[in-house]
Length: 473
Image (tube, rainbow, N blue to C red; front, top):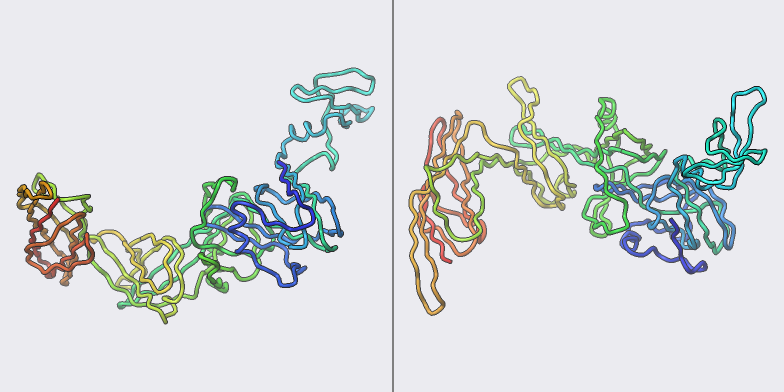
């Protein structure tokens, strides 16, 4: 693949998505990158990597050509980070198969190992598919006359790129940036509930599929960055198992530092990292934090699109869900940090103080200061059964036309097998014009579409909520 830049005298920003990414790159006031900078990676959740590399390649003043083994990359995203260096042309060669080597070498002489005492022989490649060879005596054969040997300049062992660049000044290094794929990052949180408090730990796992970098700076980008045509194909990354040694190292390692860049958040991992295919690296995102937690038992029915339906039958059982809300008010260690999307595991202690997993939840990217709600499954000892007890409709004719007014009654029977009383929040959700006209428990208006009833259920007992609603459409 060939990428051309028409002007060799001035540096240009890459078009398309690169224009949105340039703002994420560090800017050096001197216009040159520090010589000690080698490789810096930004890993996105979707499998993309923004790679910034400073290579020990002498760059003369003026126009020059360089052949570099950069590995897999998206050629259309390659550009110079150094403002004093402009990319004129790039030829990317990603095919490392033997057939590709042969196609590039038509007309060249090859050496064959025959195994016979008279030693190797040579032949000239005339073509491929099928292979045609001219032997030294002028004869032509359609088979290889021995074991083929490739010289170092013939064989391509990894994807390479040939660059033609223009530099305003000579330099000892060449700084480039490009996108590739083959790694992602995932966040996992452990929440331990104890005496009305929650201890929260967050770790980032980086599963690597097909890239390899040694001693690289690594940043993890949290946020929504839209991909467009021309970016690397997003691959399904298979997460490798995390060893006990990795987990112990993660606990002892320094935590990542976080900063906002534009409309996303970037986590910079301490030190330098080596990434290899099939491995998973784990690192704490922040120091463990303790915060307040509240628990809510919830009965919620699916929201109807509009109006009221007549519901046949004797009612239906509805799970009593468990929602935990973590306090993240500003001014606290946990509240002043953003929370990247990830999986949450919730633990509580048994009588012997052993940790037991009691729920799992998924959280989305959550800004600082916003509380965290964890929907963690259903309660074992609480049950709910909801049924419709009445349903009537009438037509209301007016100058505006004919409208339907419907009235429906419901009861929700709640039972509690626990040794302590609980409060269950029953939510009624409807779209359109509707209202609660009577209820055994006062309703709370949560929003235009949601009303909530808080029902006290005694220990080893039951309680029934009754209510009537009216809707017009």
